[in-house]
Amino acid sequence: MSDIKVTDKRMFTPDGQLREEYRDVGEASSDEPEVLPTPEPAAQAPAPEPPPYAAAEPPQYSSESGVPTSGPPLELPDTGPSSLGQPSFYDLASILAEPVQVYLGDLPLPDGGSAENLEMARLHIDVLSVLRQKTVGNLTGQESAFLEDLLYRLRLRYVQKRG
Image (tube, rainbow, N blue to C red):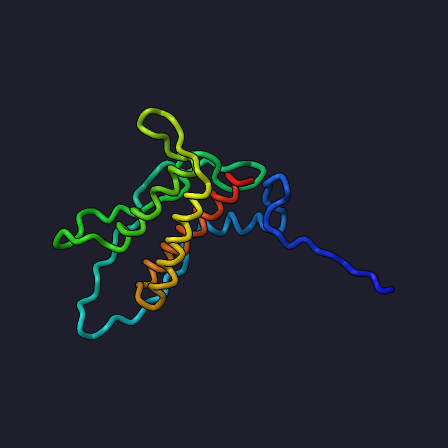
């Protein structure tokens, strides 16, 4: 009879801690992603690049897992007033991501209570994932990188809360 070796490849331990071999993944997400230029159609004028991320207080990190603990789990770029009053892709992603923070219990309600509902948080994360799938090839490199980073951070925070 041959011996069978089973290796656990999951990112988190049963108690919700990030495994040692994945600790560099949490640190690498803080680096800015490489932005590759995407070809723009010749008939359209190039879209103005949004300003860099607004300066904000750095998130608090758990010493054990190396991932954000409290505070806002993501930073959205301050795009300022859009040209001609039209919303940008960043506005759309922000609107779709905001309920996730509420349903994860990271943003308190006006009365100070919590609306933690992990199933609703998962639904909103899945909606952002559909947006990513349906816009493949139609986003600038910066927009695509922003959406990927946003999804990564929301999913990571969801897994933390779910335990």
